[in-house]
Image 1 (cartoon, rainbow, N blue to C red):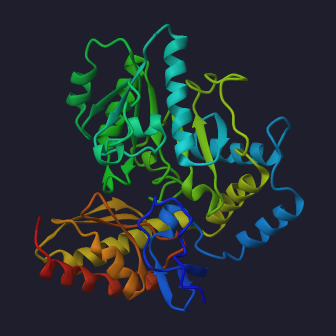
Image 2: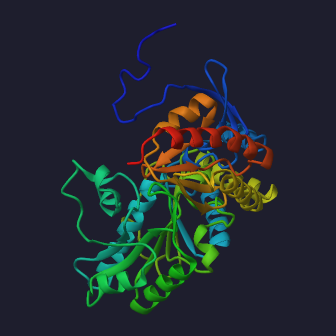
Image 3: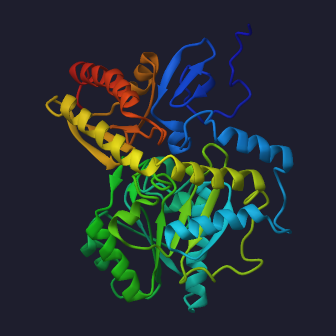
Length: 400
């Protein structure tokens, strides 16, 4: 067996952990040495249906045997089928398909700018949020609220106004007497920022403000959408509709996909020639999206996400609530953050050794994003593996 670095010729862009995944089944994966792990990360909220799902795999095999790619010069019926379903689930009106969350967010930013230009605004400005994450292209990086990952990539794109979450007075003050504002752009629950949720009251207040001022309400549901919180889209808990909604991650259950769903206010912004993509909307990705939603409906996975998510949160609160160094548990459904009072990056490697896949985000938040197929018994395994590690870590590490 070669002892060469397995990433020797790859750009040095990831701090990889010492494990290579061989295969998966349900909420479990195995490495190349045969060790089994509970996958509580699901490819960072991507593997909605877990691994090797018995309904998804044959459907994708069938599609591969027919056609995987057709450019957008021609009609692609599966695009219409998936668009129809997304419109039905969201209460919105039209969809553009792309390949990733970054691309979907980039398209949303272009839509907001063109919305402004169409109204005669020469320099449109978009309200964004502290701790937000929208991607790593220059525009989405500029909208992101993380100076650490922006460092070295200036000058950033102008036209963004940054405000704190859940503070309606702050956004009113930041935008007062500014005729250039065209949109408000945020994640319903911030993922990379530390599993930080917008309150339902705040979401409703922002919807009202956008209506009053003729702004677009643009909600990034890339990580928190597609059933992860127990609703199809996390902002639906507040009973509101978006004008623009980027999607990706869990929509294809592992097949790269992105989408921008638009309501009536935004559906006509793009015209032929304004935006496009080579791979976006390809038949394989569209089939993955169609089948993912079909299986989620057939198997009751929204209800499962709510039930198992509440079960996990209660278990962690019970086991860790009294432990010195534990702060709180945040999130909804199967999007859970365990916030500690100190940086806890080492827990990723420790969990890996114990047979558990998870991530640490915002330095001190343990992030759990398991497949929406996880059951209570599998959730018990996550708790049994993680709680001792957290207790030991908090007992032996220094508070920053």
